[in-house]
Image (cartoon, rainbow, N blue to C red):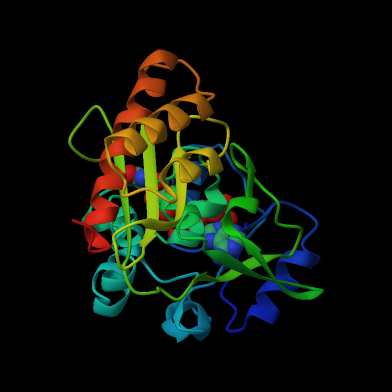
Length: 286
Ligand SMILES: Cc1cc2nc3c(=O)[nH]c(=O)nc-3n(C[C@H](O)[C@H](O)[C@H](O)COP(=O)(O)OP(=O)(O)OC[C@H]3O[C@@H](n4cnc5c(N)ncnc54)[C@H](O)[C@@H]3O)c2cc1C
């Protein structure tokens, strides 16, 4: 196995594109190194992107934020402006593993690992985040929900790397939230994860909404019907009931040792209702 640590994305992408065997990007390594040590993957080439300066910074971009692909999740929680604008995204990233894991892991790695139960992904989808992807043919920007296509599989082509994640500008009276259910108090995989992002008008009526579910389908889901249940309402009981029903209806979960299908479907509705209430409060709603 060859280990490379290029200092530009162009070099990194060229190394990955040229490799004939199994090639992997290494960000925090909290997924890749575990899979390597347990023998699930046998890389011929590992390309560490942490020595590429642009992947290590959080910058203002188009009124929002550009988060480099190698920024560890712990750094997100220490960025006051980011935390204020996108508390739901930051709380999701800060639920990953433990403090030690958060010191290494990245949101781009969470996205590219393509686990249906990835914690930061529903929050990014609800936030309408985009991934900036660099490859041999240049740059392209795609909605984050288009990156994972199946458990463990992404839409990235050979040689492509996520350079950064873009979070859009926040208008006034906006709020987001992420909640997950796990059987233990921490260090566990989500049985269900729900993210809600809303904006309100001056009267407290929901103007826009995005709702996303994790761990209830092969990939994280964006649920437009759930958003429609909130838009145009004051997010009262009737709207929250409709939101919960739409979330439960969208679930296509499996049965496993962490939870049955029925349990996941029920919990998706319960968490959606709670996450929406937190998002509304953060948006300044009464
Ligand atoms: C003890 C422990 C607890 C955990 N708890 C949680 C949890 O609670 N919630 C959760 O969601 N996850 C959890 N995880 C999984 C893991 O920490 C996350 O998925 C993490 O976000 C992965 O980020 P990373 O930077 O470490 O990725 P890496 O391990 O570096 O990479 C993961 C995958 O993505 C690819 N990749 C990484 N970055 C890029 C990029 N920029 N462009 C293209 N491909 C890329 C890699 O090649 C690899 O296939 C846990 C892991 C451990 C070890």
